[in-house]
Image (cartoon, rainbow, N blue to C red; front, side):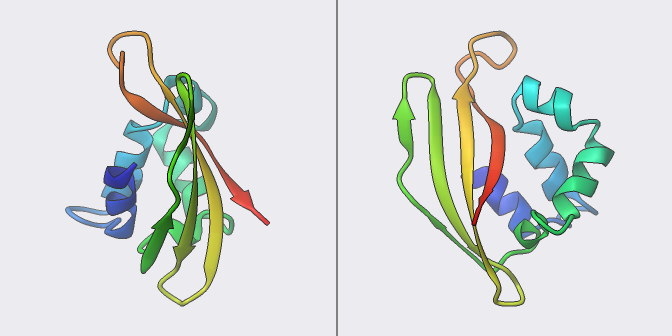
Length: 112
């Protein structure tokens, strides 16, 4: 998850939307199927709900809640403009190749 957050915080390094592409690469196969291809995913991430994640200033990450092969992590983001938002990052440990054993993102849900 830290790799994804670092990529989003520096979205255009080393090239345009590199952070969004990294985030898509860490999405679970099911997540990719429902949000892809990457161009569609990028539009969603840049939208009003998730846009704060692009080039954010600060992230506060709560300890993960892990139950079996699933994890939930609460994340508080401070955007570049000072606004804040909270998200629940849901991950699962993959069992099938080529991602077997890898934790991948199933969803990112905004918290009111």
